[in-house]
Image (cartoon, rainbow, N blue to C red; front, side, top):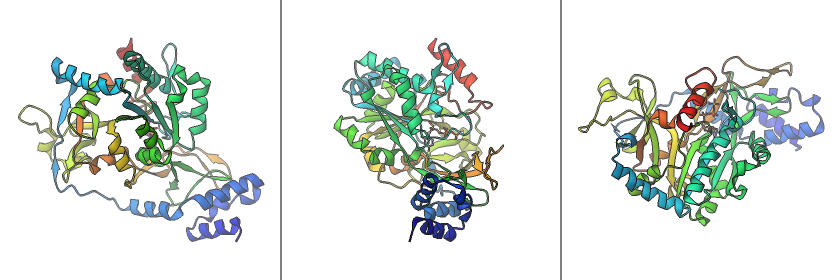
Length: 411
Ligand code: UTP
């Protein structure tokens, strides 16, 4: 059977024949592209995910317990010095690496191009990638090392990200120490349960969430690369937080000293009634849970030393031991459904930019890794010190606020 018939049969089975609406108008290259895409996509997987996501699956929280945190601002000088020394030893022995997850779509910011190329309006202007690179260069100089930097991209921004680094001469970073790796993707589904076209010859797909990072590291042989380099601790963060300390010896030191394999930096949840997700132990395992699982007393509960029990929120800053990464790279993470704004080709073959979210995206989250472990360390830091992400132009995480916080910290 030729590819056209094969593709047609698949689409018929899943009621998606509209994807071939413009087939007769395509040139040969476009026709081949579309057919190959249809044959590659796992329609069963995407429709299973879609059907499953209609049921509001709530993970049962039979037992919720607090997860202890260390507060960086309350540490004594001796403690800070001790953890710094432990962490610095790992950095100086070249046993520390950084992974930047830059495969997201950045739909809320709506910026054309990889989000890491978005420039902060300072003098001189600096892209988010350059800001991360500055952090690494500063640490390299201080410790006389070159920290390996792994950057996760998606099929959509891989080429443009690499080109951007080339154009900027890798910001002066030793270019052999930067490795790009592309994550996987899944098709998007509209509110009628249909896949959408991005071009008349192309089905719209998007990266499948930052939880794919471990599998992607494995697929691209990067875990092996890290092991060959004898790397022990790997820091994971996103691309958009302009004041995050990505090379933080205290964070490495406190994690290594605690004999745990994973840790996260956290922020204090200020409004106890806000619907944020918080760190807790769920059914005995570390997790991030919806605060609706907490009653009013739990929301404000403290331990005998005055430490909050349930107020640590996630800021996407995690440290993993290499053995933890190896272990979870072989696990299947659950998919979550997000509702996002995505341009599509309408019935007339015209591109249409929606005004509000119009498509379901299926994503795995890096924080779902935590429950595979018995314990983890949390290190609470202050928002002003380490949390200024850029998410959109109008909300609390906009470029203007991020710029002010950046200037406050660095000038
Ligand atoms: P966000 O959840 O903020 O998503 O990602 P986003 O893609 O940047 O923006 P929106 O939600 O579409 O507006 C947090 C970090 O995780 C990365 C992002 O690039 C960002 O650095 N990420 C997200 C990935 O690397 N891959 C993904 O599939 C999703």
